[in-house]
Image 1 (cartoon, rainbow, N blue to C red):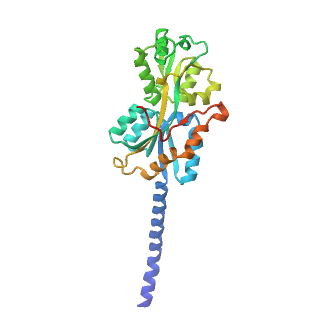
Image 2 (image 1 turned 45 degrees about the horizontal axis):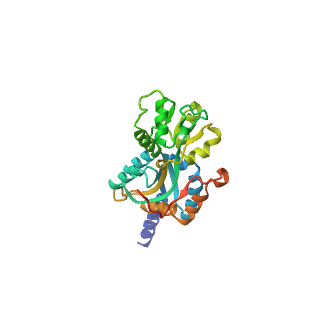
Image 3 (image 1 turned 120 degrees about the vertical axis):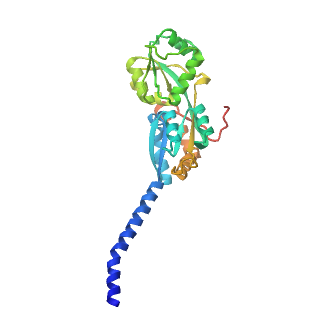
Length: 286
C-alpha cells in the first residue's frame, strides 16, 4: 500500500510542479502588466524632447514602464474614450472639458504652459509681422493667399488654428493656398520649411527644430496664443482594465515639485529660455 502511495505521489509531482510554474508565470505576467502604463499625448511633448527627459525619471522612481503614443490631443482623447490609454497629457482645453463632462476622464490637473506662435519665411509675403494680433495675421494670410500649412489632424494645435480662423472671419478650407498635412507638429514644421509657408506651432517644438527649418517667428505674444497642458487620468469606472494606479502615479509625478523644477529649466541650456513653464497648483482663469 505504501509503495502504491509513493508511486502516486511521484506521478502527481510533475503535474503539481507544472501547475505551480504556470501560476508563478501567470502572477509574474499579471504583475508586469500592472507595471505598464499607456500614455497618450500630444506630439509637442515628444517632439520637443521633454518626455525623453521626464519618462526615464518617472520609470526609475516608480518602477512603472511607460508606452508613449504621441498623436494630436484629439486623437489622444479618442484613445481615452475607447479605453486604449491609461493617462493623457494634452493641450486642447475645450475638448478636454467635454471629455471630462462625458465621464471619460478623472482628476484633470494643469501641468504647464508655453505659447503658440505663427512662423513663416523671412520674406513674409503676407506682411504679418506688421500686425498686432493672431487673428489679423490669419486674415492677411487669407487676403494675400499666401501658403499656409495646417496640421489638419484634430490636435490641440489644429483646434487653436481653427479658432483663430474663426476669429479672423475667414477660412482657408478648400483653397489652393491652404494645405493640410495630417501630421504631427514636427513634421508639419518641416513641410512648412520646405515649401516656405506659414504655420501655427507651439513654441517648444519650433525652438527644438529651428536650426533646420528656415522659418522665423512672425507673430507672437497675443493672449489668444496661450498654450496650456493638462494631465488627465482615464476613468476606470468606464474602462475597468485601465491601469488606474499607474495613471495616478504618472499624474502625481507630473505635478510634483521635482518634475515641475525639471520643466522650469528644460531647454534653458540649449535655447536660452525654457520651452515650457510650470503651472501645477495654479488656478486657471477659464
